[in-house]
Image (cartoon, rainbow, N blue to C red; front, side):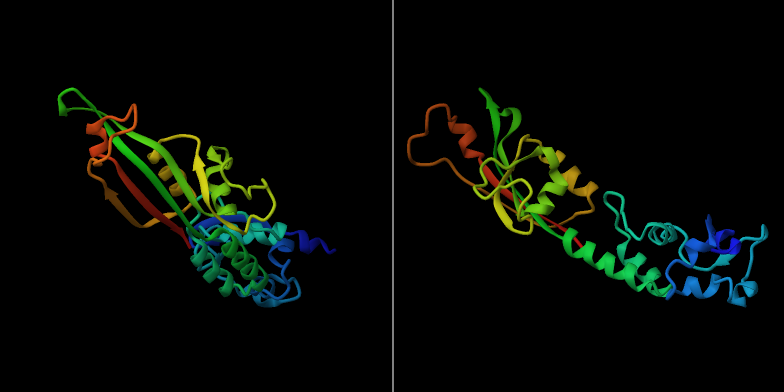
Length: 237
């Protein structure tokens, strides 16, 4: 290894400054960066430089950090809720990083998909009926989707005890409609999906009137009138 290969390189990528080495920039020999920064290639001497002598690259500076990370470790790691994969693929295409693009497509295939949240609920009332609404009552929040996605999003809050095929780590590519959450806070479930980069794609709801049959013990007639079921479909792509 030559000394020049360990040379420290200062970059200005779209206004964002990076410090790396020639070895990192040329680690993928088939990339555009390797073509530009190869010590045997004189084209780097014709690079435009900024006022402080940094090599200037007129590309998206924020996503370039993922390109450097990949060139250093040959691995892609995205922060939770990362939504810039399409832009990053475009940048990787510009720099001719074919292996990086394949890795991102593999990650997308396993991390993209949809999760459906369903819940049955009602409202607790006092003696004065509508004038004395107390609280929203949820009996259970149901989770449906691919096992691996559900586990990634909800972690320890996911209750798998009702799933007869649950193996805690086996075939995570299968789908289930038998998961539910250990809590009854629908907003907490929404927050967790939002943090993981999911967006709401659709929802529906239905209500029921008071049944004609006699109510079960402990079921309030007024509350029964306000029982409802809702489903929300979240998508990550």
